[in-house]
Length: 216
Image (cartoon, rainbow, N blue to C red; front, side):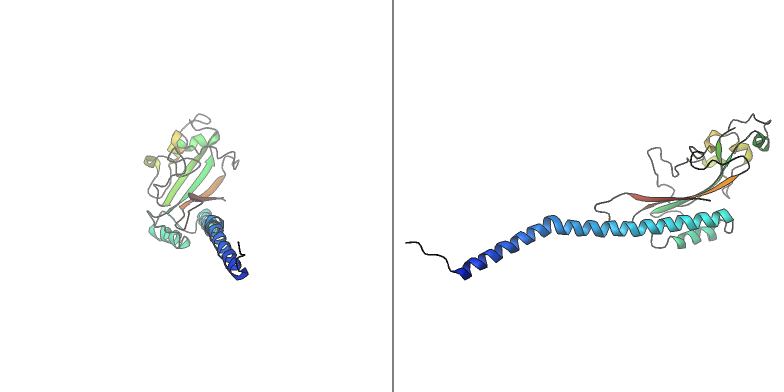
């Protein structure tokens, strides 16, 4: 003859099963969701910080108040990027400062060419390039530290300036695809700040670098 199990025993068994189900749900869903939310939140904070650093660096560079080719100016950028693990020549980030102009017919004369005859005619070119931080960080398969290209180190002076004879003639000075972003004209100059950082925080679900750009 079969007898029914006591009601109290069945309730305890049901509670135990519910606890196991909750633990499984936590392991498979809740914990990854919390970790993902935390990671995304931390990266959003870092992205905002990097955007602010990039904007401030570009603003100062455009006004010419600080010479970022000098140690003092580079240390200022490191202070602006506090918490992002960047040093003047290394670390987890790099800030690229560029001056870009458009070469018209008359601009060829500044480089020693007759009007309208220089090789870089009708192109946007770099006239200055300063890199602060880890210059070995690259943003694409072409090993560029800037989306607009990287002028050869051989034509960049110690202060970051590029001679007119180089930027009107050397193809390496051409700023690729810049005119489509800002259509500068002959005699106009655009001051560009680009920031590229590897996040030092948790990146379990969203690995990869964070970048920002400001143009003045």
